[in-house]
Image (cartoon, rainbow, N blue to C red; front, side, top):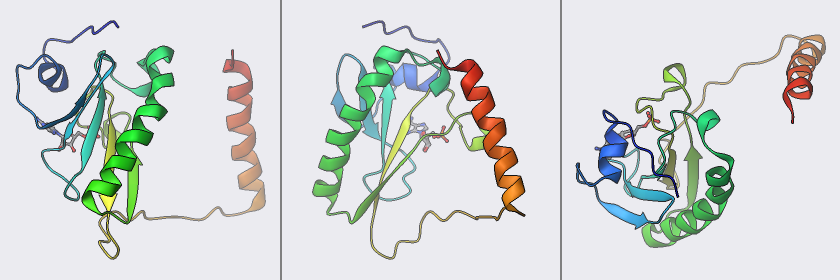
Length: 146
Ligand code: AMP
């Protein structure tokens, strides 16, 4: 496994053992540890060991192992914390809330009534607008798909 690190990256420093963390799991490909500023107790970060800034730079081999790790960590998290649900979030770029430019997944245990994460939702103005947006996305997807 290629564990290329970046010098000034806080998660690379955690991976290298230069900064301490509360580790949950440590494999060749991923490290999982407690988020220092949890949304709820037990909030975990699942971090690929290879330095990639966003999901778009993550090698496909690592990406393909991701769901398996998420399933086992997520299921252990729900059981151990007696949670009633689980959110899995991943932010790309600062405007989307990414503070640490080393791709990672948030696993957040949820408890009935905690109301900790709420999205503000909008509406489309018409079916025509929905059609236009559908066409815009599918047209790029068609041209960029391998
Ligand atoms: P994001 O905003 O998606 O980039 O999330 C970055 C997360 O990293 C935040 O939830 C921080 O609380 C967490 N974080 C930053 N530094 C540390 C650290 N040294 N140990 C554990 N979690 C950290």
